[in-house]
Image 1 (cartoon, rainbow, N blue to C red):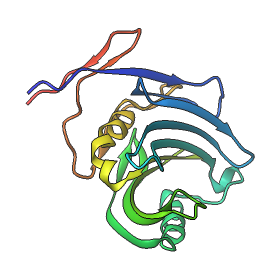
Image 2 (cartoon, rainbow, N blue to C red; image 1 turned 120 degrees about the vertical axis):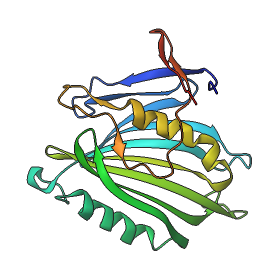
Image 3 (cartoon, rainbow, N blue to C red; image 1 turned 180 degrees about the vertical axis):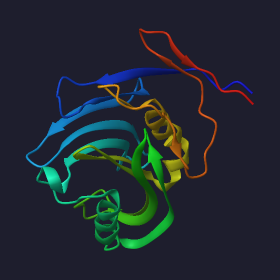
Image 4 (cartoon, rainbow, N blue to C red; image 1 turned 135 degrees about the horizontal axis):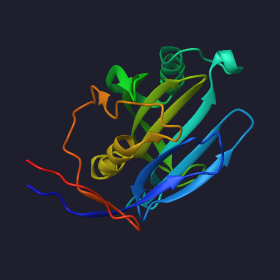
Length: 205
């Protein structure tokens, strides 16, 4: 069955550290962040019903150990992420897999945990969060693509994460394969249309 046609925009940055592009929902807004130890593109999605958290996807770039960073491999970066996130209330690992993304070593994990939202509020309520992270090593950098949303919205906005991953490209064109094998619970990607360029990808049965 043909999927619904969606409006998408392409993210591209003049920052050489953000040396990639991808398609994101047209009504999700991108903010670039540059810090001493990392560079990041944050794609902000809709607010949850309780108005306490936006669904969001971040693409974070950090140097590997050989370039002065903290971790040498995707496995080391994943181990640190899991160790830190395990301190969160009701933490649970939902799934984990490894493979290749754009011909590069990659690992992917999905976790759930509880936050009290709004943060630092006297009326904060326990809120279930789900988070999915894909870590890729390419050259002397690690690329971390992270999707987070309240549990009640997680699956509704998951296609946005899948589409960003599916359309992700490094700008220097060195890559050959545009699939990550395996993806956790893969679903057919919906049809998309990039604004201004006529980009279309159709879903079929």
